[in-house]
Image (tube, rainbow, N blue to C red):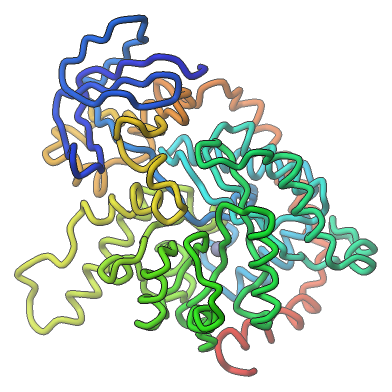
Length: 478
Ligand SMILES: [Zn+2]
């Protein structure tokens, strides 16, 4: 349903705007994509489509600040993996099996999955640029799903082994083709790149922890020259941090700026966190993958306490679904446990409250990606990225505290209606305007294709190439 005039009536508004707070029996007006009023008992003049929000929480949509959206077809592949397995299997094997149509479906269905569970914005850290057609397809997937996103063009190269979907000749003759292609993508698909555009262009340098600093700086500058809204990279990877102190180095070289977004960062040192806070840089903690794969204790709480823009990301659906409820829960309970474990004796006061982690998943995310004045809260003047979460299920009756209910009780099946930029993309618990049975059929076909091709992967050779890199990350060799 196209943007229009909507009157959400009589909901419990969890605004995430400190000047508004939590308001029971509250109405929200949306006019052509913009939230115009948030107050009880509104009777607007003019033609509004009324949506009854009785027995529902109205909240901002979730902001996912770190995702490799293309991996939809690889669900459960990494559920028992650590980072070295992930690198070998996802990046060196399955990634090389994706054709452009698979990249499209991975991104399209990954974005739909996100909307279904209440994620209205994502950073697509896209490292599936196997060819220029893949880049176009990945952008189209996000656009067709109608999610708000910053598409971060990744410079990464997947290995071209015989039988893979890679063009070995192109990689050999023009190994730097992605620089030119990223420029083409920016000019073709992102002509304006304004903050209020639903889809924006961003950039992701390749393997920032393993390339020489000068090369990394050159790549960051390339992204900036293209006008990237966000430049993002993985660093500070817990047990996989070889002690490079990348943020410190970039600070010394005066490269830090508010357009940067670092994912993970469990092993950031205090001076690095200070520099990140000072420059208004975003941090994305991804509790699921960090806790599972040895990437350390999610840094979001510590980072937030020293003034950083802390946020959450779902990272990869090859190990867990795109579910911000799950990320909030894991982040909060893991940190509570860690604090209890560190302290002497029994805890008589809880260390962190539910509202902190809901902040990371909404306003914190908006700040981390430079959109604090556009999304992240139910505030008049902002774009209407909103959720209507029904509280009629057995799990949510009665609600008690709505913030606590969102963080520790609700799940994607409670998300009844989703607005992105004032457009309804989920309604009555169903994705709007999507023939899911047909799309699912295509996704399963694509999955079959990828797995069939992956049987040809020379795993011994891949392991021989990948493991020394992972040992270097682990600090075992230089
Ligand atoms: Zn990642």
